Length: 603
Image (tube, rainbow, N blue to C red; front, side, top):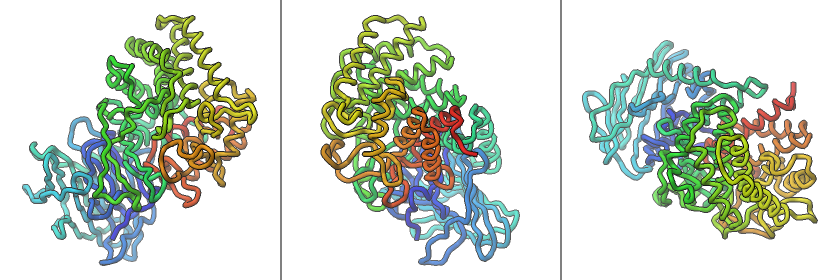
């Protein structure tokens, strides 16, 4: 009986349209088909084996748990997973991957290879559609196994013999050295003709070539290259190739607080996350992804920047209604499980800054000019002119009352500042003097109302005494220089008040004088992005050795494959939150670039 592993026990494989999570014991516990945001066909990650899984590994006795792989790795700089088991009867390797596709049916390919001895193997495939709720009709068509439910069909192709038992498709076989037996599942709309017969070996060669060629474009060659490249591959895997949209994570409802209710669906494109992802890709040589994201943005926002949403569907959809899947007990009983995200229509003024910053960076790095991108930027500022001084929900999507969040105001300043620079460069026309006055007004307002003179620190919101890790971005976006005493005071205050015992950074207090700012029960772990921001700030104020040590402690939190979730739970000493998380891998890249530029790395 397989039980979902720790979050860090999972590997990511994907095809730039959807992704699967593979546990150490060879079980695929999560897969949505055909897109990231489709219903899951394997939802065991958020429930039990009854909700769908695919296990492939050495056979084990009844009532015993499948053994974890003795070792696993990605094949070079790719998203091809290789897991090996050493058993009393020999060694076996399973290679898992999803071939990148244009319009063909999505495939998950698993190739079993005998390494030594003769190893009995078992494949157990239990497909459950609609997030584990619907049992499909499974039957044979021309020697192929197909599972059908409503609009979906999933086809299994293998040369191994299969049989059905307990609403599960099994295959028992033995591999010897040199044996290679492939299993492929392919999704297809159920009303269409069957998908083409897969060619697993050719697909493996093509997938390896794809990743080799893509990684070769990377312009970073510093001391942290392994971590940076793995993060870049992860970000590429989270990009929806047909549109250029970037999901925050490929999962929903992996909890920020084990056993709690802080469980959200991250399979959408947050403008903030996508914008910072774009900046990391641009700074490491990936211009095509930047161009595709800019085109996605222009389509998503369309002619309506006044109603800019904080997030959209991966093709630009606006309606992302939130529902609770009450038949799923949740990861380690962390309920509810949610599909969709009700925060889509929140007001988060900082998004205007992140989008404008991304467009500015694209412009500065020579991305081919797009006149509508410049027009959009001007429209965003015209909206901010009359809205920047409103309270909002802020960067962290609080579900408590709106406030005048300092970070939101700072990012409004960034939006105006970058647009002024665009006009000054001669590439756009706008009321330069009026917007310079606006920039000064926002700056003055933040410094007067968002700064606590007694404690020499900026605060989370106007009138609050609480801190917020997003204040660490003040020097990084150029709102104040790093050597400003208010910046240094803020960094040191956050170190004192928002650090966990192991030195990582919380987003904000979830208890204390201002408890309930996010309107949620429970606690949460250290937010990994915030901890990377702290390392950045320490390097900027000259404490480079301290910055490097923090950065390398953060790198040590990655799982054995280099992947990070959203948060780190210092009590349980494990990763928590949706996985893998773009908002963790992006600042990893940024901090590595900053430390490399400063020479702040060891031996």
